[in-house]
Amino acid sequence: MKRLTGKVAVITGAGRPGGLGAAIARRLAEDGARIVISDIGQVVDEATPLEMIGAAEDIAQVAAELKACGAEVSAHACDVRQAKQVDALAEHAVARFGAIDIWVNNAGIGYIMKPLVEVSAEDWAAVIDVNLTGSFNGVKAAALRMIAQRKGGRIINIASQAAKSGFPFAQAYCASKHGLVGLVRSAAIELGQYNITINNVCPNHVTTGLGAWQNSYFAEKTGRTVEVYLADMAARIPMGRPGLPEDTANAVAFLASEEARYITAESLNVSGGEEPH
Image (cartoon, rainbow, N blue to C red; front, side, top):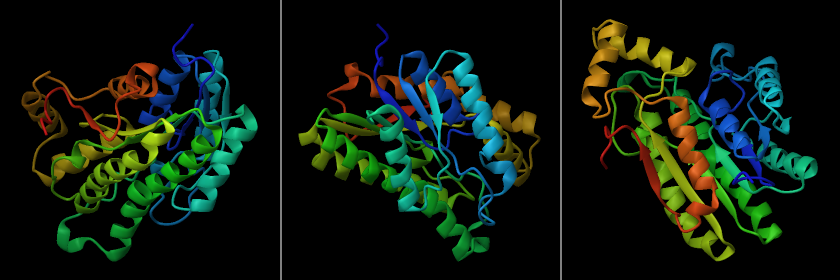
C-alpha cells in the first residue's frame, strides 16, 4: 500500500503547469493521496497578472494531467488573501473527499521585486497578503477541520531559502517567508495536542516558470547574462545545481507521511547545501 493511501491533500497555488504546486500534487498523488488543487483562477488586480497566476484553464490542465496518471483529483479556485475563500476551499475538500489530512500552503508571490526605495505600500501589502496572511488563512482553515476530525494531520508551508537569508530587491518576499518560521513555531505549540504537525519546506532557487522570470530579473539587475548568472548560482551550491521541483515535492511527501509524525515546528532546507541556517 502506498504511504498516503486514503489521505486527502489540499495544495494551494497548484494551478500552473510545470509549477512547484503541480509537482507537489503529482508527488502526493503518486503516494496514493486524493488531491484538491487550487489557484486564484483569474486576474483579480494588478498584483495578479495573467502571466504569473494559475488561470482557470491552467488549473484544468493540471487536474487533467493528474487524472491521466490515475489520481483522484478535484479543483477549486481560491484567492488565499480572502479568508472566506480559503474556508470555502476547505469545505470543498471535505464535501468532495470527506476529510482533510494534508494541507500545503504553496500559493505565493515571487515576482514583485524592486529596489527598496521603489517599493510601494501596495507592493508590500500584495506580497505579505499572499505569502504570509494567505498561509495563515490556510493554517487556520486546515487546523479547524483537522481538530474536528480528531485524527491528526499535516500542515506544510512552502517557505524559501529567503526564510533564512536576505536577498536584494526582495524585502517583502524575505519578510513574508521569515514570518512563516515564526508562524509554524507558534502554531506547533498549540496544534501538537491534536496530533497535528506543522512545518515549512525551504527550497533554494527552482527554475519553474516563475523561476525563469527571476533568473532574467536578477541577471539584469546584477549586470550578467542569464547563463553567467545560472553558472554563478550553481558554483556556490555544494551539490552543483539549483533545486528541481521534485526536490521540494519529495520533502513535502516525507513531512506528510507517518515517518514524519514526530517532526513539527521545523523549517526544512532543501537547498543542496547552499542554505546552512
